[in-house]
Each structure stands twice: as C-alpha cells, then as structure tokens.
Image (cartoon, rainbow, N blue to C red):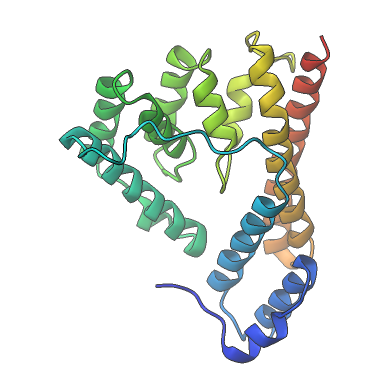
Length: 252
C-alpha cells in the first residue's frame, strides 16, 4: 500500500527545504498524525530524491538488454527475481518486518543457481541480483553469505560490478566496504585508476546520504534514537574510511 500524506500536510510541505520537511515529518510523527512506517518511508524517499538532484556522479550505464527484441525465458526469470527482491526489501525498509522478507529455501537455491548459470550470459543483470542479495534483510544470512563469497571469488576485478553497486540509488550495505578493505584498512586489490576515479563521486554520494540519515536520527528519542544513531554512525564511519582510502589511492 502506497503511503500518502493528507492535503493539509502536503500544503505545509510546499516550498520547504529538505531539513524543514523532515522537521514537519518528525513533528507529525510525535503527534501521532503519521505512522512510524510513513516516517521511515518518506524519510528515505526524500533523501533519495535529494541525492539524485545533487549527485555529481557519472550517469547511469546503458542496460545490456536490447529493448527492441523479446526477452528470453531466462531474462524474464532474472528480472522477475529482481522485482521480487526489490519489493520485499521495500516492505522491510518501510515496516521493519523481518518475517515479510523471509525467503523459502527453494527460492534461495534458485537464486544461487541463476547467478551461477548466467553470470557470463547476462553479467549486468546478475550483478543486480548480487547487489540485492548483498543488502537483503535475510535473517538466516544465507543469501548474504552466498553473495559475499561469490563476489570475493568472481567479481573483485569487475569494473562494471563495483560501479553498479556504488551507483545504487537506495542503499549500499556495509558488506561492500568489508569486501573492498582488508584488516589493515587498505584496498584488498589494486583497483584500476579509472574505477577509483569513477567510484569517488559515487561513494561521496552514498556518504552524504548517510550523513543526512544520521542527522535526522539524532532528532529521535529514547531507545529508538540510540539504535538508529548507532547503526548510522557505524555506516558513516565505514563510508568515510573507504572514501579516504580510495582518495589516497587516486593520488598515486
């Protein structure tokens, strides 16, 4: 169900800056005029839109699929899987219901099979699957573990994969940073100079979104504030660390 504000609330938002919009959202939430789900959904939506407007990152790469030809059965299944995962992630982000995001063992097994059997035929589409699997709120972590292992073994040298991952308009998981940095806070691999150059504005964009999420979380109160601030502070610190490392690497 799409979350909407009423006519009066939309009128109050007219002409407001992002911070002013958040202050209104926070006030309505405290007064019980909107639900927690609406607060989370609209916060993330507005940050995403503002980030798109202000982004200095390179444009979106071309889709590998020719829209003028029919899709194969495999392509249809790959995109159906992507839509399912995106839908479940959206539900989790909005309602924080881990039960709604649970996947059947057969579904996880099919996900793994699609990645393994189509990584060369449809690399960009499989990249999308891996990126979604890496950030999927899977309580068993089975999907996350598979994606992390597959990326470490097959995608560390892939320009296209890392570019797609950091260009994600919604959310980049901490596992992305863990995959790129070693225990000595250095890049695990010598990524190409071109990749590093193009990753810097993408990482900056994700860092800026996390900074805004943290600022907004500091307006919360009680245990909820502690939980959100702790998680977002950890993510912000990780993104800043990675950004510092890649900026140094780009100077050589």
